[in-house]
Length: 173
Image (cartoon, rainbow, N blue to C red; front, side, top):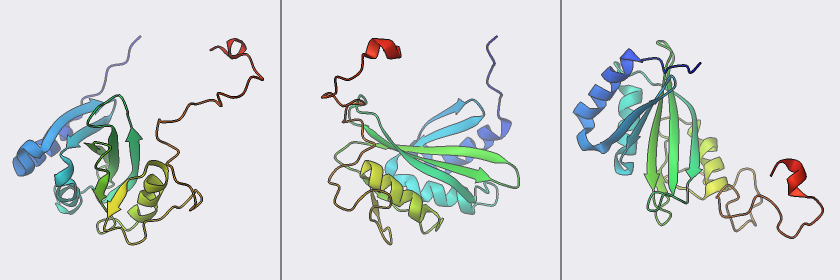
């Protein structure tokens, strides 16, 4: 039996307000299970996030998480950033996404809206190489400062190609 996605009535209201205020900067909207996902133009990121947080009708005052993505097969939009927001009083959750080419990994910092974005942004810099413009202390947080690469990028093989001590056929590959 295949479960259908629940309809989220409030999503249309939020999207309507965003489209009214930001127009063509709202690139796409989709519902993934019970999560609305809104893709916006990168240049409007801070305006959209500020609106979602500060407008009393929106009320997305809590930044649950932010995370980077690397999709090398999407030429021209190889990298993405996802902001997961929560309206606590109404228990509404929303994802805001932006995409960008590998040649332009500058993203405005969200620390002015949510101070907790500080460590989250440092992690995404550390793992993917995003440059959070205006960040108060953008430096590695988990990896060594001497690392000259970003380990979560899909540029590296999953296995050590020099190892011959196991037969992949025995591991379901």
